[in-house]
Image 1 (cartoon, rainbow, N blue to C red):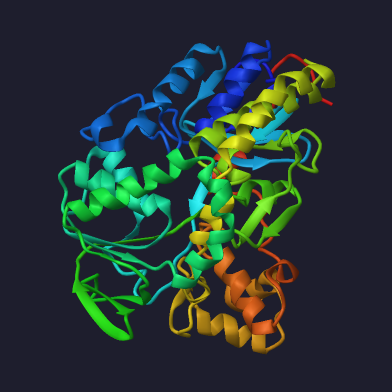
Image 2 (cartoon, rainbow, N blue to C red):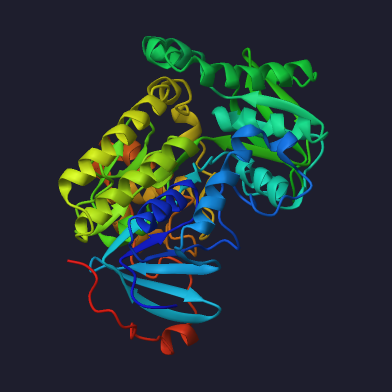
Length: 469
């Protein structure tokens, strides 16, 4: 690591790479911390090291990331792969571990581009071996060319169909797709269809995935509810309700998915303000048009701020870079506004289909909040929905108080897999809206840190002075 960066970027997905390129082109010293071994994030995972699943399988949208990756490599930004960021303070001090050594680096501005997480899908049996998220199935396909034949894909959202299409292009048979989008969602989304039709190409792309799946002979069963996975020590069958009747499909692998939501753990730990987004039923960090949060010098970009896909993330990263450059004094507000205007216009155009997609693929309440008390909610601490409801009945009003009763959210993932479910469970149990219930309070370290690393923590002794406000 060299001198203190003007701008530190956390994450090297589409938003992080684009932010780094834009900031470096303006002459800023940029340092990019990335937990993965190579740039790309989840969307462009392994983009530089093509595995057995090539562009013909993963598609043109995936291949488009190669140009951004090359621009990032050529930008002059200092890139640190395999770097775990376990803290960002409100004073822009980045706590990071690389190769077993922990450092604290102070930056003039910090752009958090941590991407999205798959929404938890708490159904009976979701903790059984053999049950994974659809995103995990895609990671294995992209990074290693690994796939599970005759798997059942269940849930909702555009990504579900994309991954099934990629499986089929790779020659991997799929047993069935169980679509949980409720029929009422189609009617609810209709008023937003005209705006989406302005980007009809995006809609045709999604319909193309569905058509290809049907042409391959894969059963696509719509309007499914009551999903449950069962088996003796591992997944053996998946049950569901359709047309008023209960059905079962034998399956050793079940991939579940009900959309993605912003990863807010890091921005929460910094102390940034977050708002409940009723359209996506999740928390979002509050930002302005440049990605600036309410904490001075801290920016958020990409799907970690607002889920919109790869191109929207790239544009958001560019805007955050302009905002950060203005904050540290590299450019003035007039230059920022002039350069940012066409990017903001392009971003608004890219996001045209989102209101329609958010309404159509908003997961049903029954899939977000388990009805059965025996369903595990917090996988780390094995806390069930019944325990959360019982704790609420004792007078517990919020997630942080809940920790004292049953340890939900106190495991290694720090609430990544249960926070949304806990918030909505407590909202249901107490008769209050989710934004009144609140979220878990996150504190650093937001990622596991060995005590030996903490004890040997190296101060920020790089030269260059304080690069920021």
